[in-house]
Amino acid sequence: MKPKVDYSLYLVTDRLITKGRDLLQAVEEAIRGGVTLVQLREKSISSRDFYTLALEMKALTQKYRIPLIINDRLDIMLAVDADGLHVGEDDLPLATARRLLGPEKILGYSAGNITEALRGQEEGADYLGSGPVYLTGSKADAGEPIGLTGLQAIKESVKIPVVAIGGIDLARIPKVRETGVDGIAVISAILGQPDPKETSRALAEAWRGKANL
Ligand code: TZP
Ligand code: MG
Image: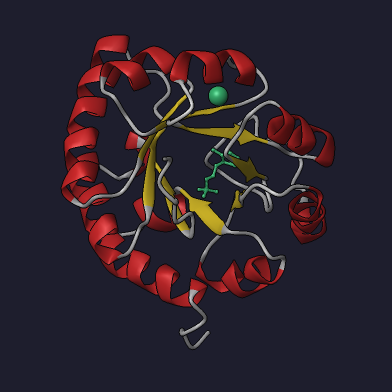
């Protein structure tokens, strides 16, 4: 049986945003602060370096018993036996990825509109990453923000979990949460901050509706 996944605070990595600090250390602090799953998403990196980093990230996420998702690279996902794969429109087709992954692994899909969301659900995605909700400085080709209205429309069109991504920070959490989505995915709101542990704790508390914003 596929384990039930807590998508509430989804950390997506970018080793270039940690301002010189070690990525693994920053991710460990973030997990200790309350991150519920991690996606290793690294661009401009050799296959060998990606593989080595993925192995290290696997050991880390295993230590804290949270899932590790690999962005795009099915070969690396299989090589390190990660918990899942995240693909977008320009990557391997979902059905192909699902066939190679088997039924037990988590398969995520980037959906920026209802058409893509329905396709993702139809073709075997376990969850959708939807955005960018707001403007983001972390993905050059992210496209126009879909806003809270676009996000809510996607959430209401599918049965699988939807994770909001793009420009989400502490102050924006209440409004994002009101759309009914299952979690938030962030890069800079955690890895771009000086204290990833405290920032993650604040984001997790805000998601649970406990913070004073
Ligand atoms: N996909 C859509 S927006 C985005 C990705 C990977 C970047 C999110 O980064 P940030 O810093 O949380 O806006
Ligand atoms: Mg991709």
